[in-house]
Length: 192
Image (cartoon, rainbow, N blue to C red; front, side):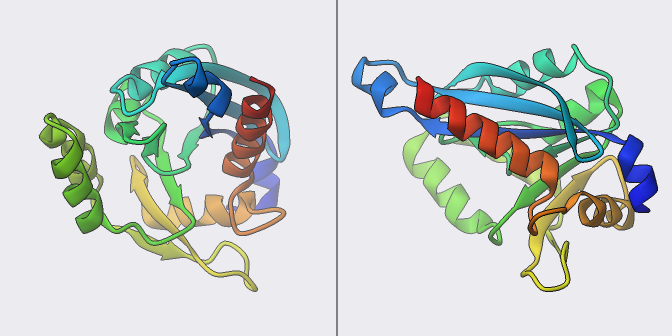
């Protein structure tokens, strides 16, 4: 994808804000969940909601936020948010018919994830099914001088997703939609 096409492309980045110690100290087991809509490298809009730590409401909250926008693709900062509250990229793709790209800074260790799910959740099979649907993990070099990011793609070819990732990686190896969502989520979480 050329930089000119990227200027008009609308990509949603999704990230959580981590756990707020202030909220947990008040017995609230929630985390901030943020979507940022970029057109090219400019933030057009953002939305935030709260999701349950280790809950099962992240996919529903994400699809609810996405219904308010017109967009071309979604980039998730992994599939686990607020602990093991999972976004199911296949559900997001099926509802919106837009590619979903899962970006990880480190190589996912699905064996360790499955073991953790088995140890800590009675409904581990439901949660594990999200990982089973994803398919292969690929390395994508987003910037020539940086280490790769690890990518899973739903609803598009790897070549297309790789070109989008490279075009969207402006400041560092993490594509701008995910980086912007992380900055907004972490900044807002500090304010809670």
